[in-house]
Structure formats: C-alpha cells, structure tokens
Length: 195
Image 1 (spheres, rainbow, N blue to C red):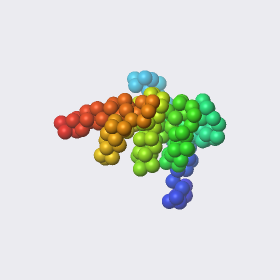
Image 2 (image 1 turned 180 degrees about the vertical axis):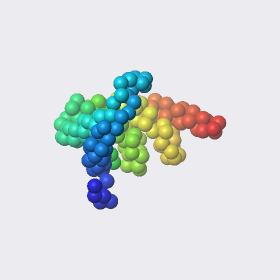
Image 3 (image 1 turned 90 degrees about the vertical axis):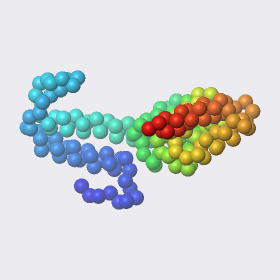
Image 4 (image 1 turned 45 degrees about the horizontal axis):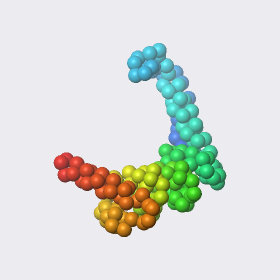
C-alpha cells in the first residue's frame, strides 16, 4: 500500500488502507484457529480470518455511512441534522467547514447537531463558533454549546462566558448557559486541583 501524500491523510484514505490490510490478514489467517467468544464467554472455535473479515465488514459499513453523510450535507432540515450527527462520529477535520456553515441554520436540530463536530475539533474557529452558539435563542442549543465548552483548555472561554453573563443579549438563553458553563468549569478546576 502506497503512503498517502501529507496533504491527503483523511478518514476515507485511512479506511481504504485499513480495508486492504484487513482483507490481506483475513486471507492469511483463513485457517488459523482461535477461541470464539459469545458475550465475552468462550464459545465455538473460529478462525482468525473470520474475525478479520468481520472487522473489515464493519469498516466498510462505516465508510458507506461516512460517504452518505457527506452527500446528505446538501440537504436541509432533518436529513442534514442526521448527516451532521454521523460526521460527528465518523468524520475528520475536513468536516469542520460544513459544521461552521451550519451553525446559523434555521433548524434547531441542525444547529444542535453542529455542536458534535465542533466539540471534536478544538481550534480557534470552533471555539468562536461554540461561543456564538452559546448566545442561541434555543435553550437546548445554548446548553449543548456550554457543555461542549466545559472541557476546553484556556481562560478565554471563561472570560467570554463572564462577559456574556454581564451583558446577555435580549431574549437569549446564553446567560443561563454561561452560568452553567462557569459552574461546570469551576468544578473541573476544583477536581484538577485535587488530582
């Protein structure tokens, strides 16, 4: 298997490489005996090749889900929210752009699904987007953004939440979410001090 160019190390390339390696191992160990397991308990003997083949099938299903989710980003509403949820689980840094574009979507479900991707990739852009979602008029979106920000390192989050507490926008639930963020942040700092 050829090495990927430095600019093209994406989730799909890694999945393609792993797929080829798992297929090779499945053929190589087609007759290698192995203890089978059922719910963690010893069961009928199987071959190691069968185990590699199962992993390969699971990888192929995940790859298909990722390709379908990226294709569904062009849709609106519920299908876009489902695609963003899938990308939060399977996607990579290339999907952050789609999440940043969805943070102003009219659907609350889409905005909430956006937070999953923003939480996975800690950059200045994603932090700024989460702070913007902290001011969202929908309480569930503001709470989800606060939860995503809780474990982020750095004092800029606490300072931004403090500023939001002092000047919450009219009708926004950001003030309540900022209170929750500061309380949770304080708990994490207290826990870190004990360790």
